[in-house]
Amino acid sequence: MIVMKFGGTSLGDGEAINRVVDIVCQTLKEKGGGIVVVVSAMSGVTDTLLSAAISAAQGDAETFRRARWHLSDRHRLAMTKVIGYEEARLQLMEEIEALLSDFENLCQSIHILGELTARGSDAVASLGERLTARILAAALRDRGERATAVEATAAIVTNGQHGSATPLMDETREAVQARLLPLLAEGVIPVVTGFIAATKEGVTTTLGRGGSDYTAAILGACLDSDEVWIWTDVDGVMTADPQVVPEARTLPEISYAEAAELSYFGAKVLHPKTILPAVERGIPLRILNTFNPPIPPCQGGQRGVAGKEGGGTLIMAEPKPSEFTVKGITSIKDLSLVTVEGRGMLGVPGIAAKVFTAVAQEGISVLMISQSSSEQNICFVIRAEAVERALRALEAAFELELARRNVDRVWAQDKVAIVAAVGAGMKGTPGIAAKVFGALGKHGVNVISIAQGSSEYNISFVVDEADMEKAVRYIHQEFGLGGARC
Ligand code: ADP
Ligand code: ASP
Ligand code: MG
Image (cartoon, rainbow, N blue to C red; front, side, top):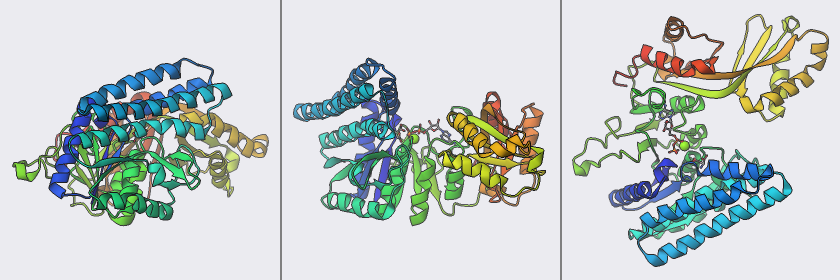
């Protein structure tokens, strides 16, 4: 069994959807069955839905109405390009309009209340995937395949943490098998909404932005699939974001641990949580390009082989050893570096615990931590949007220490970015850090803070946001990642 997930660009318009239909039909022909499809919303749709809901809460009664008609036009246009049968078109049109009318009604209520709750936000955000699942299932039927749209709200059971809910795996496994196995047994392709799920009580939740990859891995784990294929708009996991480093190359094979580090530190090609269910069940993940698909061996192509052009990236427990110590360079921006400092912190136990408890109680996640050896300074990186809350929480937690001058100040540096060099071969290899920081020094890039975990799978450091792209390019070049075989 194979779970195939298609991202937003892969479903971005009628032409792209037709490619997806070709890929699914071709795979079905080769495998003879056992295919589950997972879809994202069309590119940009989740952003449109959410920003319309936010502006509705702020008193704007126009944007969400305009968004409805824009979304209606875009989905209708795509639909007319992928569905030939008039009757099927009319039926789908009705379904699209019903969902978009739900959107308008939800936004109207949000507008009246003047408040967008996390629960309301998930209800609105879920609509993009619900639209594409219906369109793709209808397009597959139009080509003569048996396919049906499946709402993941009836399959993936999560806790109630709206915006980044956590699946309850036992309940989910049961529900996924109950919902999907009968369809598969009848030879029907389930086209499942990515990104969305529901609580035990049936309230819609979402798995976090970019979470459709995670949906695919959850379904793969629950169905014990042979592989999970993530179809996107690049050839695989690359040595860097090709938008930042045009000469970046596709990595033929990487380990789960490397993929986890790369995605955690900004390689958007894979949602960081995708690795978890796959590792647990030992299911290989493959990243493939919808716009450059592998040619099956039966058609004489070499591109079906991982690592060759269009062969994608295979992510598994034990990839072939690589001559490359550093495999990829990643970066994340829109961050702030928070510092707690004071001479009175020296040797005082519990300061770090107090810092991170205060931040955790605010539900803020910390991306990187560093502490100076004199214990006079602890700094950590968080998303910029959380910085005000973090500072307030820390000032409250250290009120006494601040008054006694044991802690001198709690402050934040905005507009910083994390850059990370990742690769399993770094472990035990001397000179990697020297090479990373030597490259930066040579080009005059200032490093603000540094961290390396004891796993030695990555070296990460903080730079000014304006230096981020330069830093990625210099290190990529220093390790010869662009011009060499990886
Ligand atoms: P999808 O909509 O298919 O889920 P995403 O936009 O979420 O696709 O992820 C694909 C994008 O990830 C690529 O277009 C690329 O710009 C970006 N990206 C960032 N880092 C990497 C990397 N190391 N390798 C490949 N792509 C990367
Ligand atoms: N549509 C969702 C988002 O934009 C999920 C995804 O694309 O994976 O975040
Ligand atoms: Mg994505």
